[in-house]
Length: 186
Image (cartoon, rainbow, N blue to C red):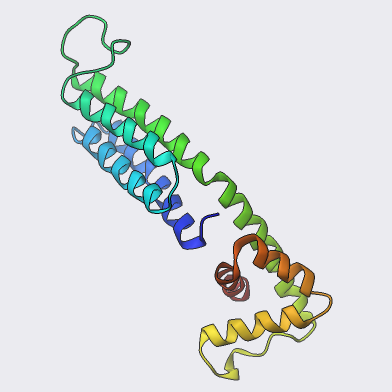
């Protein structure tokens, strides 16, 4: 299970794909290099989070580097001539499509778990507000202290304790406080 900041970092990398496709559409000559950089960033993020999809991304990056140097896989270049920029860009787009799928799949389970915990946390906050368990923001103390206090109040309430423990069990106590903070802000 990825922590929320790590998950959001990888989601941010995925959100850069439309910009890369825009570069392809505008015939940017640096498209292949931009895809290689994107792959490197995705690989680093996956490696830092100990996700094995990093190996697949590294392999795709290596294939793209090879293509940029003029060597495409045999199935991509049948006439024996050096590939043109159009062929290299098409290959880079194909590598990007494949890599995006692998990265998205690597975080799919964590993203679903966080989404479920986020939905449950919003419901818990609504109930906690109705029960008067959430003090006004002017109560003093740091944000961290306030969040911990609210979380402890929710854990102590017999009606909310089970669901609150479930959220903490799903995503951990630190990420639970992140979701609590977000739920309070909405």
